[in-house]
Length: 264
Image (cartoon, rainbow, N blue to C red; front, side, top):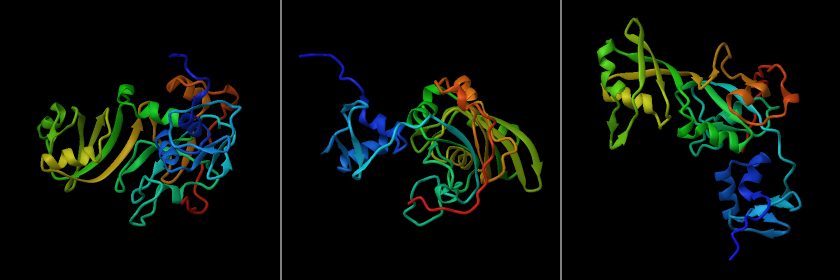
């Protein structure tokens, strides 16, 4: 029995690099019989392909792999971070600029949250930035109803367990009291579903606004709601550690929404 690795890359990785779908989505497409290699429909993702193989998705040949790119996006409140919503709610993909290529989100923000969301056309970047081992700090400005003190947040700083789910300790700073609400800065290294909201509710506080202001080294800054800004390739190489061609190292230009589009 030979232990020699077949040449090429896994088919799901190739589809991801070509901007077709994330690896997980690609695996689902393969299982659904939508992908063919050299004219033969495949039903498993454990297949290596090379540039000599002809790959089609829904009978359409895929193009050359796109250059890995990364964008900052200021997600407004009220948009769902998903490709499709079963309830018919507006998604971020309905509102992104029309000249943006197919992109995937790095993590998510819930419908009522706003602020920095990273977008990429490369499944490898998405996976790398989402890995817990990356350990990047996410910072949020959070408005909560009530009059908390520094001691109110002690349980969150120590780490909570809610409904059997363990939350890692959070870094929390009480910034100011503003009428019936208080503003706090929260920093954490993982992004479980509605983590900050659930943690605050557990200590009797209700979040009424949540803005992500940074994700690792990437900052929201003065980016306006709904705007998209591409990260320079040099910054990607320095911060993400990916081999990105230097010729793309151009000054990023914010993109605003001209008209909504539907990505269904």
